[in-house]
Length: 416
Ligand code: ASP
Image (cartoon, rainbow, N blue to C red; front, side):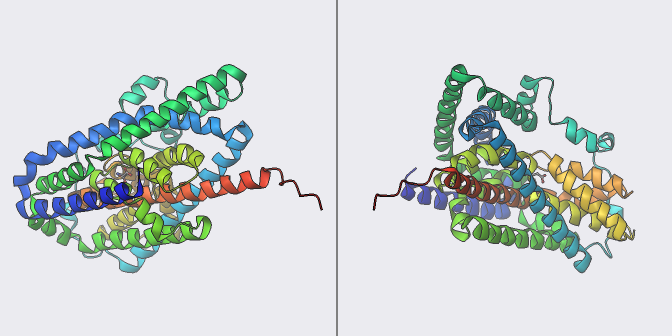
């Protein structure tokens, strides 16, 4: 998309988001009838996710060339994501210990929300098992992206080893990837209206601004701690992007459409097509866009990680349960795992938090304290999740580019 159109679209989306916020805040439930327009936009994005991921990952692996290189880059990507996720949890833990948002909270409002009690069994083995699906069609139907990515990775790797036929098939997926990106561009034309409707519709569901503020006030310090932590982590990631990939605040603007879409939809998987389009247009190495971003949208969730740490400690503080260094270390480890295990869909983090709560024997009823404001915090943590993925792609893209340059044969010296 030409630069001018990109900028115009970004402004239109920002205006749509702001208008959604204002209308939803003031008119509350009266805005409910526009919600379907937002759902339509989100459905259009979801429509392209599975074919886009399959085509992008397979062609991305194909363009890396050799499987050993894939192993190195894949390992580095996972290490990078793990480190940033862990740093987000650490930041959350430090803040929640400093602010103590849970002290003095009335725990009577707590309660296990419906459908949560039977999820108690979610554990480490479930996260590992979620990598492989016995039925790819069912996984695609449920938008369970991780097994689809794993399959595409394996298929892409296999295709690079089977000679001519493999190359033809890879060329097919290359073409499919280009076509899917074009579809995303077309869908994004509807983004200003879609995002307006998503935000206005969600505020309508919350009963408008006044009702929402009343909910926020009940757990004000908790909300402030999560938002403050997310903001600091956003800045930290920006600094990492600047230091390792020379992409700082200008990259925030380049990813603006993806960030607003993340806030509007509350799903990093749903936003993935937009994140990929923005990263591509910003000139991030295409192999990183096709390989690192889909992986990031499913396993890298810095915002969710930070939120899980703050939320769990908040529950402990509200119930007057002291968690020492050993327990907080357990929170650190399990919150990191829980964020990796969370799907990139709205409020998935609230469900995987059960892993953390059970690890340190906290009452699941505590989740009830967070419910009313969770949809809003979810939007913000999704935005940080998407930013984390985008910076990750830029950093790994920079590495791949530098590696190419190092591997390229030196230019022939002119004869003296
Ligand atoms: N909604 C978040 C995402 O899609 C996940 C979560 O934190 O609930 O990235």
